[in-house]
Image 1 (cartoon, one colour):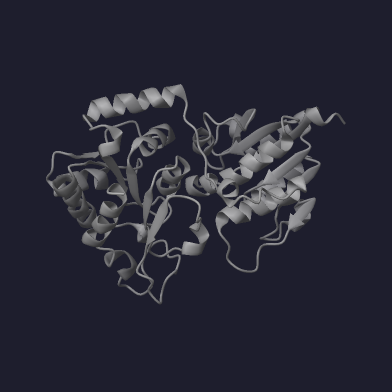
Image 2 (cartoon, helix red, strand yellow):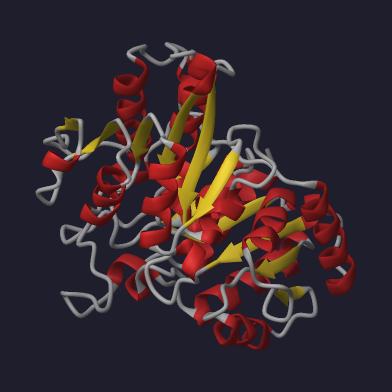
Length: 351
């Protein structure tokens, strides 16, 4: 087979933060192929939007499980794989369903980790690491197997998170700055205090409002409260509680991946819980402060990005709870006080 005709499909992770932490692996795969293959991304529509502007993928295949239009259904995608005869699938997902899709689509090589009894669906099942490792390494290990070539020995290259923006996204950023009347980006901080994956990761509105006042009063910076479609009321509540006209929310702006990307790219610094916006900001090289509660520091570890993790290091952490604190005290987030976070903000902006 002519190598230039080789067709490879990357099954992208389902969560924004995970997809960002997969970018070193995707970049490495792209570099190893050196233009000698057609690289296609399969993922949820909003995950695919995250990669708009990147040079890595030639094609995109949107896929949804629930309420999917016909062209995004499992049946349609399996038929497409059979019709187009893909040569290799790199599964950055762990689900049985995605392995079944690759197998049913008759993709010749199917490489991925083998949890949940899906190993028989893979041509090269990779054993799950026995100890917890950073997610960046988790994905890079699969690329090492796929390309049979180890990644760069330079850790700054190996672990660099990376995203890009389009001219349309840059224009959107201009419009948002104008609509809200924000100061220049170097005088704007973004706060993201929620999490789409777990309410236990949330930081309180009262704390966010108090921190906003400290930033406005003592640093003369603007604060932009980031939010998703299900968090608009919380964002508005923070603005109301802050009682400062330099605190803004994204609640009345277009709420999509494009908006989040451009605002996080432009802001001077992002303070965030362990959620997607945190990793998006890091992928644009911006300093981030992590309000880490019930999740693992190891999971998001990356010594080669501009990030500081703020944690209480309690005996009960990490617990990975999603709906309520098992110990009924939620100290992992309550003991991250506004004053302590503000001191870390000062250390960054005064560098």
